[in-house]
Image (cartoon, rainbow, N blue to C red; front, side):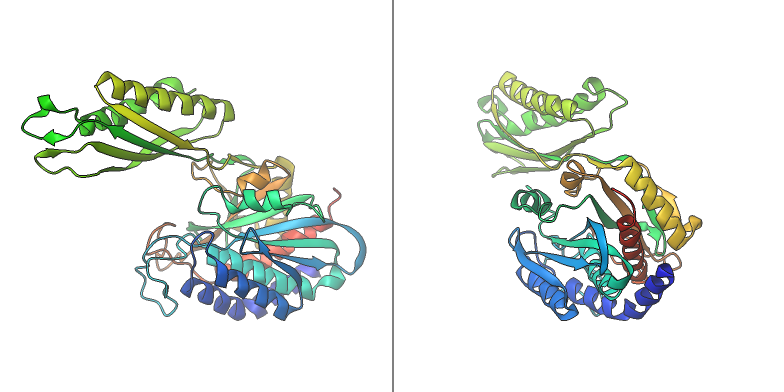
Length: 398
């Protein structure tokens, strides 16, 4: 049975894939800077005897595994390879050696799992027909997103996959489980940059100044009505400002400028465009009404991520076959963003969550934190399940 072969190989390769994950974790690289990471992945695929191309999107790698049975279709599996500008707080043997850079979003897990899939599927080529395209994608964490760049370069062509699958760590699920959701899953994500300009001066003489701090405060408060009074209540929307700064200023000094940075997220493209206009109009209007001005820059980020209904239902069925019904859970929509969404806008896609939490030890630190880590048993699940999904999907008629 193919399932038993995969489970046996996933167990056999687990220690080696853990070693790969720890290497990637110890030497993380930021988006668009994954030079050594790309070379490492390419070298691993070469050592496995897998045909590959290095240089996609700068540092990405694409590998190809062809089954030996006749016929078959093409499917794609994707992992991201970049890290975040975060200082690691964990004291582990594989702690980041690159100060201020950390695999705090689990991309080391995604990449090492996909290398494990490569090992397994390469050994099982006699058991399937078709081609598996392995996409090791750079720059998921930074706009415009590596996915958009690879798509422009033709990663979904020659050969053209019929579906694409991806997985992402999920620390609130224990290792050995996965979670998924058909349909709308993750939000679009736009970045907002405002520069409020006034006229600085002595804090004891505000009548001689145009206070950009006060203007900025009014803008932040007023922005809350964009969602609460303009959005359709049934459309998920989030508008958050996470950073306020000024050039100069003190307890008794008003600065000339205040900068604000925020994010807008939703799951409706029409409302997304309208909200961007409302944000710009409201910020500019408030600043002008208070005697100042506001420079507005909104960077359009990733679109919303939608899991194909039919494909995701198949993935659920296959996952239950491989892991057992008790280890496959339903997840709610999320307002986080992910550039896998670009793929999901163009073809049937399924993006599911891989449990990485250590249930007994309470290691469930959130992603994007300096204390994030995983139960490395998740790697056996990650590479085994994805290998099973790939073979099952190759057997499904397009």
